[in-house]
Image 1 (tube, rainbow, N blue to C red):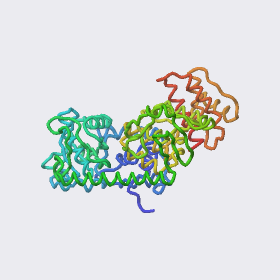
Image 2: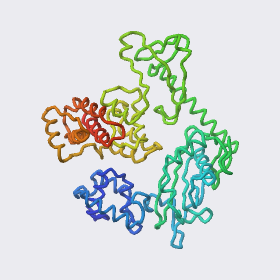
Image 3: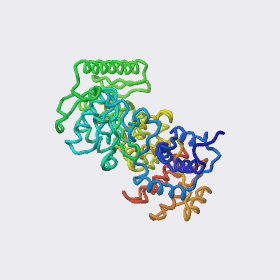
Image 4: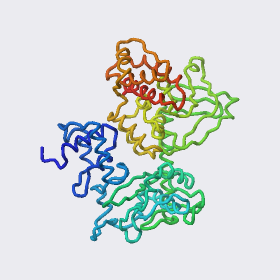
Length: 493
């Protein structure tokens, strides 16, 4: 092996960061410097064991001390931004005076702004730019870069850093339809903080302004990003967007008709109320049929962003046997529903919703494998799907990705009472918990079940009973949820 450009101590720390659940780019931030650039691919190699596989992982105490010292050196939260590296070389370049500027200037995919503010008048121009980029081929808005000179000056305050991506998404949802997809990130260039909003091209363009916003956004207007400016769309570009939308609609209609022709999708006869599909058929009562409504609910279909259709009403199957098997689930996808459906073995209609929903919960320990297996999709497909989402809680989305990649686990070996309870469970003895402290200890014991334990199914009623006896908001609930996650891993992971 050739000489390493990163020390064994640093490799050990990187391994500890990845074990703790930090993303590759978060670990990369701490070791990439202008005097020693490290490719982001190096972190991936360390993670896979292809680089530094013989180096021991640092312990938790050493990692905690390193993170504190790193934060003190930077003078900012450790995960707030990453330094300029090779991946940004195409965007920024040295200006010859010791600073940096945007390479190539403002284009149809790059816009520069010196400051960031969420108040309506100041944010209106950003909303307009986001709409224009989403209607074209996407792009990014750089905050902390002076328009005109294109010099990187850095943001003067921490408003961008403290702004929740969910707040930005809410502002867009109230101003534009359909809602553009954006990602919030940041980098440090020569010690200067630069905020970035990355805008994805929208599959259902054109995006239209819903209301007046400041002096920049006018109700009913369609904005488009041209080279160096965002303005009301011209007829040629509008015709192109409409033509592309029509092509997608025809392709989607053809796909659905092919599904009906091959029996992969069911059909509903609105005159007779009969629903037919390859798996069978059922009939909706003719007195109920006129009362059924089709309600548009965005982002609930497997094709993200497409509207979903939902039947409202009681659907009765044809015969008694089928009626006993039919189950209509009306509950919203909540953290409690995710845990209870797993513990009860309930088959949900759309398991993919239960995977996606976990990117929008603050709780990070919820069963995932039970639903992932039910989708019939590969782990790679689910990970790519999650990473392309605009998540309300990105840290929760990243936690789900780590668990699907098996770089994070609900397994945890607790000391104290949990040790004796774990031994009893493994020996097949009964265990019970009547007080909150006993429920915590029993949950901790379940977290310590080793890989290969084969009686996880038998413990589900016990965990469900503990959950039923625990009030909402209790700290005990977190331990019970993680215990359910460990059973989920043992049974389906």
